[in-house]
Length: 580
Image (cartoon, rainbow, N blue to C red; front, side):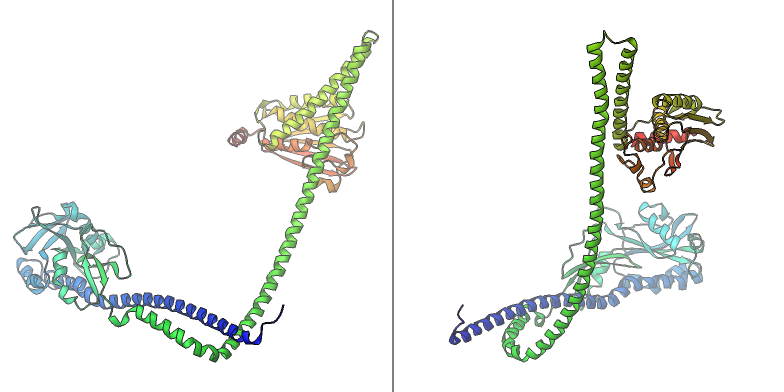
């Protein structure tokens, strides 16, 4: 590729610089717009804070402290000199309530005793009467809650909005309660507050009228205030409008504050245009003068990049270690999967062989009987028939083991406990095993003192101990004795099967209960690798435990503990099986 001619390089570089400047100017303008928006928002927040800071010192005296002075006057006159018509009139003159509290419809004093709040003195602003002397105010449902709370806490309370007078055109307002205590100080309980309570100064206030009377004192505030009526929904919050609540001696005041218009000098669009124009104008001037500063920034950025590269390198090493660890775990899982597949293949081969052998015996004996029946002696006929029966029983036992294993693995093994005689059961089981093993090894039975029936699933227990006894005989030299012991300890039955056979190698003991797995020293002896797995499922179905102690060429001892004498536990295990 040919290089660009020198006369074309300068304009091209100029256009590149112009495009670069344009892009930077646009970015600066966008940043200026965003920045101005942030400043405007922050300015609004600051204006709200300043406005509320100016508003609170004005509103608090008007809505709270002015009304608190009523209670102070009551303490100075009514509590000190006693409540009488003279002190009441003196109290009214001191408070100047008609002049200082526009919107106050009435003011009165009520005595509180025996859960009654009876009006003693009452002065009205208008002819419309809301309450009257002698009236029990605690009987009014609209006032009772505020009276009770004020009596319990010793604090000023207000009722919800009610009609102040009779008729449909009566004004609406709240009734405020100022408790007069016999002594000052905070009580530790509501009972002490009530005991110290002398009575209440109460007044009915039309909040709307009172709020209108104080508007002149709020006109210089940076916020325009509007009082929300009772039940009126608060308007949505906007950048220039907020809703707030103020609680005081005159009750709860819900107001909407609206920010007054900002000065014309604070208009945001002019500043956005000015910032954008200045940024675009000054960008070319500062482009080269800031090169040195940019170089320093680039060096600092390069240093940070090197630091980040070191961090990334450390993270990569950590990631590689985790990948290696995960790879090792996957390799172990893969090896286990391969081993499981091998065991399954061996199981299929074993099952095929175990089925094929009895089938061959059945086929051979049936052919001999069909062809030479008339030539065979009765003894030979019986021998062939016994061969067929034995092959059928062998296939049936194999199929039953496979079916029981599949049910156990799927969690569908049935459990039907019932009463059983252990001694009779073990004796019969020993005879069946001796017959099934052609009396290869002498079987010895030792049964301890058992005076009551056990409770278990005889079908599952037969699987357990016929399998253990058959294994003991199968893996022992002919003539070697096998001991079967049964004893009771508390609510448990303890079964011990002990032989003096070839034992289990140490490398195989950790996988005794793995499906299809068989020890290295029994490869030439027929078996499925499912016997001990089924035994473990049957034992656990009873809520019991199994323990195997063995040493190679020294024999094996199998201990099984089952709660056969604890009916409640047995029923619990059965119920858990049904729930599952």
